[in-house]
Image 1 (cartoon, one colour):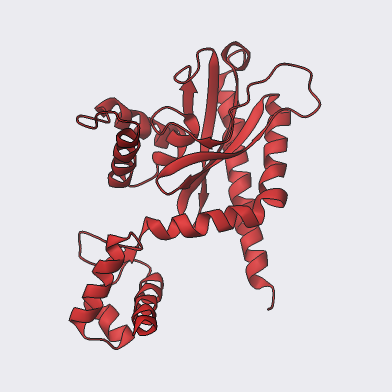
Image 2: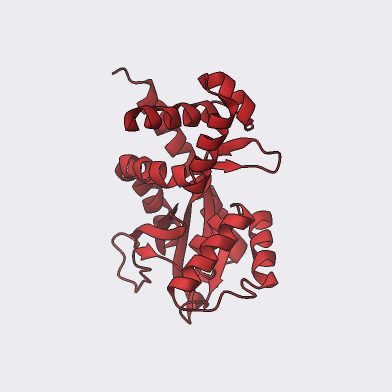
Length: 259
């Protein structure tokens, strides 16, 4: 019985995955040869755990919880030969520490950071792991391109975990800042976490997931601001496009291999 139920869930998921712009419960039922009420119940159960999401049109699309399963696998499989070369190039170009972050389970975490190789100058090391969702450039670069209701839920969960009030948060200025990130293609954290430290990050888009990663640089404010911020951002945006292209190309290569 359990395996049969799991099989039905699998059928519903694969049916929704095959629909480009969402699919109604009636169409799911027809595709998997189940009563409409059963298909609808299964789809709603999958919505509860985030594997599916019901749109305003009442059609179903894949949910963000599936991304949390797939994104780590995608990154782990491609880190050494896809991401690290881009980080090395960015750090060498700007002579500052480069970093790479990902979205995972409603959090943004830095998964790689690379100081300038062979340099004797002091540098900022951002550390690995979770970053503040509302301050860090790596976070804002990703959140700006996520669904607002998801961002709101992730921010509330983070504040609850930290024992902070969630009412009237985030402020309207935060959404305005994210809109600016979408327009500019990059986010800045200028002393919001550590005084005298600045970071700039751009989203890395990987279809069909969207902006699941970000890439950027961090360093002493005085040193990075000795350059035009827009010039620095140009390098970061270019690195983001390169990283995205390499991720997609590598995934396509792996997918084309037999066996």
